[in-house]
Length: 544
Image 1: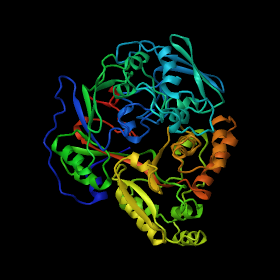
Image 2: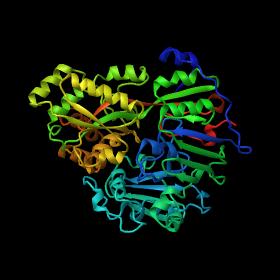
Image 3: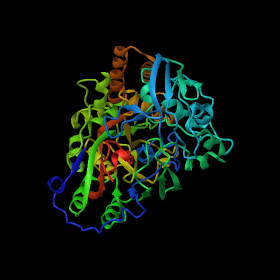
Image 4: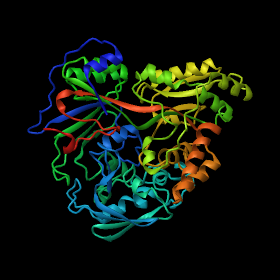
């Protein structure tokens, strides 16, 4: 992590006019402070359910303040596993893990967490519906239409099997002991237990909610903060849960306010309206740093910015055209011009953390920037200059719009006619009406293994394949091997072959750069940003 001081910011971004800010109102609520955080977006689906909100913005508000799993991710450290709602876990065999639950953990409704709650959190009613514990099959949302208000949203069973392809169920051994049973061997089970889709909820809280929508706006969980009020597209307020097993939370309230415009987030921070402003682009760093009493914290994170291709489009159905698109992009120019060199170009869809499990493919790179090769590929494809649509959100990602404009110009220079279509939300991005082509996305690593992101995001039950954007039979077979094999050498060879397919032969995506987060804040808060979208407001990351 990098904490930018004023001199560093000026050196990177150039001089900007300083702005003086009035003191904030941090300690307005008794002995504990309350905070207001300006974010670009709170939730894409207007729920607080990790299974229904698979997004970067969801990570920020969910973890680690609201939702918790049996094993926790070390957000402020190496992002690896640490004890959470379970104090210990033991592999019984390739398909089974036994976990000892932490005793005395309370849900926000006052109930003690027991093995029954854990079992329900991974149940068909909560997640899987009637899906089978077997990978390699695409589960489509249209197969699960809710019949009542209490039924799961149509997308959730497929997402459940995306994250837990072969989970057969949770066995209750006793009040504080459970066994996780998988239908197949899986070397990544421990990792899945601290990734998205492993969080524990109160069975009674679920049962007492009149509808899924009611529950999903105020889930009963175990985290240090609980939902006080959620106003979709406006704000989310979390309030301290003083019976938290990890000790009394240091803040009274945390209010996330949706402020889509960057300038409004920055101005609100400097005026004292907000204590934090998230998702700042690099060119705004100097204006925050120049203001007395403010700083910007920055870090590259376990997330890569990518763009993906829709092969239902008759032009993009030809892999030669997609290959040409990947060789047209000067990634270094984008990193230098839009990011001030403050992020890196990764080795394809890989993360340095893969080295911990010896699954990093050495020598692999993103496709080279080679305009002449791109032109030759287009000649081979007999491309005639027909328009390729590019559905683009207005800066959901940092610098998304200028990045899109730059890529369109780079594509134009090799003869590709890519047309931007500005849209308002993800529903319009994925809509089957009209012709789809290119879109933006990002890919996160939640486990020290290529299972995330390449299998989860591009395998047979990925969103890409559920939306019918792209599919490859060999890739899908390799994904099953990755999910079920315990042979390290075979898994590593499969990971390499998947990169060859998805980035070279039959491109599903192109990697642009590693993502980075820039968070403006008041300097007197003594808070540290994690190398992630998540914002940690537990006692260990807050100095009174």
